[in-house]
Length: 452
Image 1: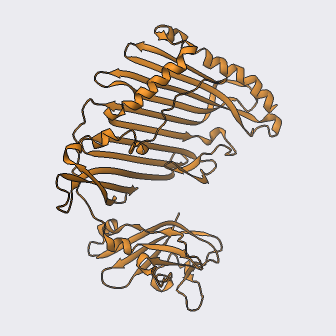
Image 2: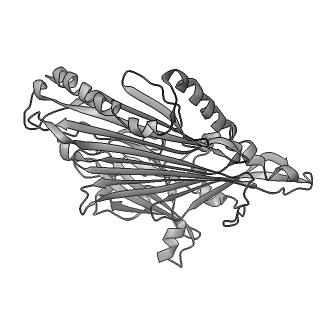
Image 3: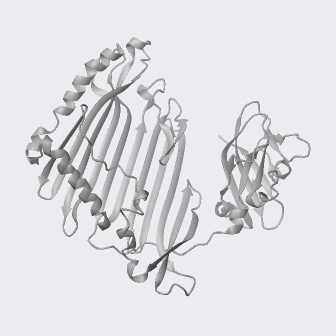
């Protein structure tokens, strides 16, 4: 029955994409099928060659999953950290929404990329968790600190990170690259196609027509070309909650629709200005296997990209960039969590010194956070700072002896003689949050809280 469903539904869906916008296309000059591939390849190449005139790139991708019709959670999305997928799936039965944005600005002597990911997992009405993370990657020039590079500027790279409501963490690095003063303004625009193109989240790939994908292109005017593609496939099937059994599985269709717009801009040439793609995973049948007038959407993924151009390199008018050297003491005091007998860290602490001083203005020193740490039953753990891991490493500098606040008395000594270790006394694996305080004067403190 599963195969029968797919055989029945595929012609219907393909008919739907084949009947699209012929009237609209006929208003303009449409390319023939024989011409289309070669002609559009030229415009994609022209787009890439003219990227030195790019002033702003904007990318947005939203991924929304609704568990209402996926009762057994067979299509739950993989949770990703930016472009790095993990093996973790979104919990069954919960609404999921993930939004990734990326903006890149190319200015005279500056290149700035900001990437933000905001993820929500919950019941959509009144409860859930939000993870909001922002990364920035910036390049700019400053004077060298020596007299040997007269007439040159030094390239600086800045990485910054912000998690939820925490303060921004900056890390500036002086690069060995030196550039003549006269070449600074065009440095990034001249290298946007090579050295710095990897900072873009790219989806601009020329589509190829297949047995399931329809690609069409036409000239909307002498200075604008539109290319569209549509595709429907059936690769998945999920269980039917009303009628169990292989013969009653529900075929899931994947519908993809995309549009790319190319324009000829005066003094620049042909470039892509806009790209849109929408992917939906739909159930065309109800639980009694009746065809629905409006398919039930389980998941929807939308991608939008825009390109803005300028014939000249634009000046940077934002907040001034001032070199910020690393606080070496903060780095050297950064603690990591270790499992007894293993020298590979389980987790690394996050510097929250600025946040901690908001509610303890008299505090002098550093504070580090370990968020949502799972302590396994019958396993022993300890903490050690970077300065403690040297030629004679000590992985148990911070343990039960430093514990000043215990999470409902669920943290106990591991009981291994001669060792400064902790463990959980719960009967199952338990999540904790730890704060480690390294004061300027006084002893290190370990604070433990139960984590949701």
